[in-house]
Amino acid sequence: MADLATALRDFNKERKFSRKGPLCVALVITQHARKMGLPLDPDKLLTDAGGQVLGLGKGAVQTVLNRHGITRVLAAEGGRTSRGSISNMREYVAFLNGQAAGGAVDLDAVEAFWIERVHEFFSAKPFKIRLDASRSLRTLVRDVIAQAEERQRNTPGMQYAGAVLQHLVGAKLDCALGAGNFEHNSFSTSDAQSGRNGDFFIGDVAIHVTTAPGEAVIGRCRDNIDDGHRPIIVTTARGLTVAEGLAENAGLGERIDVFEVEQFVALNLYELGKFAAEGRRVAVGDVVTRYNEIVEEVETDPSLKIEFRQ
Image 1 (cartoon, helix red, strand yellow):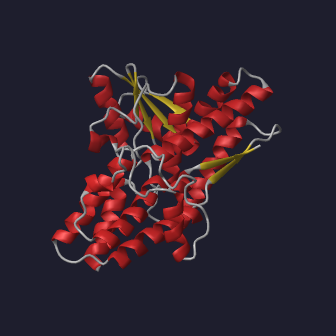
Image 2 (cartoon, rainbow, N blue to C red):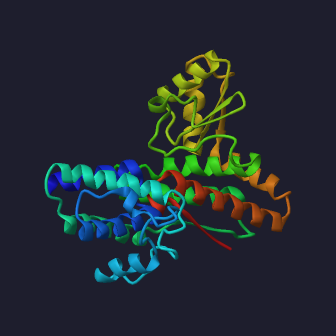
């Protein structure tokens, strides 16, 4: 049981199966495993046309959820129209078959694991942004980061603030430049691990986003300079002074641009909104929408999303 639980946790983390589409796939394929037995043939789990996963739909998913007392709808189409459902199915089938190769698989325990992930999905509360004409746009940015920091204090080991900072900057850049100009990565994928020049690399500019600038980020900036790139550090108000001091100590004070994130994002919101009240509302909505799309694409924790209230 312990080995199965560990394997499920590892698979979920590596394959990002805590999103609603993959969760639907996991629930339905687990039912197929109950009926057909293991190992499964993934080719037999496709519709006749081969374009969708067999039996994947709202009805099948809700039947499983209802059995566990869950009445909320996980996905309107039950994951049927989710991009990547077939590849998710094949990955999950390969996982189950791998477990079966080592002995009998407790499918009750497997189902219980995915039901817990569904509970987590529904209980995850997004951060909140409220647009108030009497408050500055910098305050909007400050508020959402403060919420992330508060949640981080209450959940030791989780780096919510860093993730929010990274994806907020990424969303702002996408809205300013158009999506597709650079790659987005999960917050846990560090520059050093992936060999990336920075969190975002655009033109000859490497952008490093961090809540706690240290020697490591200055070292990556030095590497950027040596490679002929221009490094930028985007950080919090507290991190600004620290980053500038570290850059000066490294003899790079005049070669690294350091920006405070509230100003970095807020000024762009004014520009995107063409300095008009209605334009600002639309710009904030667009950035939040893009931010949530990025979280959906690269993270497994839906509580990182932002709810925009007007």
